[in-house]
Length: 540
Image (cartoon, rainbow, N blue to C red; front, side):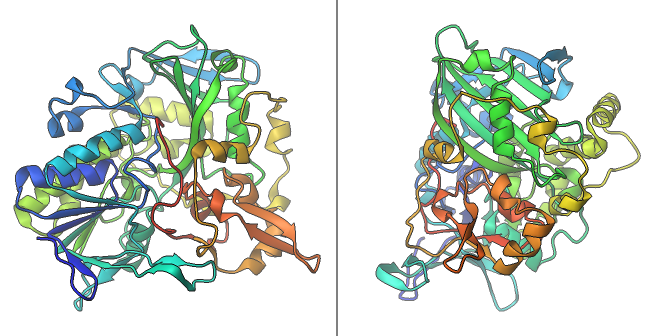
């Protein structure tokens, strides 16, 4: 039973942090197995789904189990994948390549993850799950024995200096014997817990990419519903991992996106601009010309796979889905593995009532098997595109049976200093073209993300030593935060004394977490802003 005391404490049997695929799947499975179990789900977005961003082509197995009749009333945007194409782009041309087996999407469906989550939430509530949008977790709480006992939500109604306003409301504590952290990639509390319990002590560093996505409404005849296209190559060089997706939806809509591995070396690279260049490639532009953007967004994604999985259990808590890193990079899919991880967690709680043993259970499951089989494909690209492709052929042919496991590296450590570069900037080296498709710049893209923050609240992008930004980083890296951020959050300006200063436009933030990951000094700490702040993604 839910209870709130004078000390603003709420108690549940199970607490879930994050109403994404892993969190909702876990909550629903728990209630399906044990209806009397009290389950609470916290979600930092203003409504469920508003912060979820993915491609997304999904394998439906976990959804089929969770909601067997879902096809009778599917979420908005749900298109059967009917054809796959895989292309390698050059500056002016394109060559079609055999589609990798992992990207054979027969039987899969193209969805909007934002819509899928908002569709799934009321079904979870119908089972008795309590969901609270607009309530992020600020920090994990610990009992006297050091076990996780729940979380604290942030104080609301603080001004930019951290002082209470008239609207001030203190945060509350939510306690539970088991807390499931399903915050997604680079989760705020998950990051704290991995550090606190040294959960990554025996794993490789996690690696990431930044994914940018737009939804377009295009003229009749430019869209082929169910067509799934992926590309590699231009506008990235052969040493930079990444590629694009183009998913053809119904109602003359196209979802187009671009992913850049955040282990790229050149700090002058601008992922947002590279995405806009991709849209102007002769193979891509005809699909979009005459159309208009409906919505846009950006989000970091986990790419480390099997060898970068941290220990996914700790006293009193578990890490689920992308909070742990269950994305299958060669498949370009993570929703099914995230949902499956949540369902495995629910089954584990039903059987054992504790987090103990969950890590071994997940690794021994179909999720672990799937990730281990492809563990060497993503790191194979660390030596360039052609080496990566050849290695991928080998690993696919052997089904991951190689007697070795390739290592991952921390993305921020791969950034080269300006004095180490001898190549021209990516814009020049890759022959960037003048562009005329929307959006005109990053600020225009932020508009399509519908991001909202109260300007008079504490800045949620904490720069631990701003002097590094204006001195060392300017000289050594040329302030890459002004380029890798897809929302123009970071600007180098002159202060009143005419000296260089870092300006943080926190209200622009789309919560992608790239700055927290790629900053070469690791002095940017992304924390949860007031509940409900951030992007509002629809149909993405």
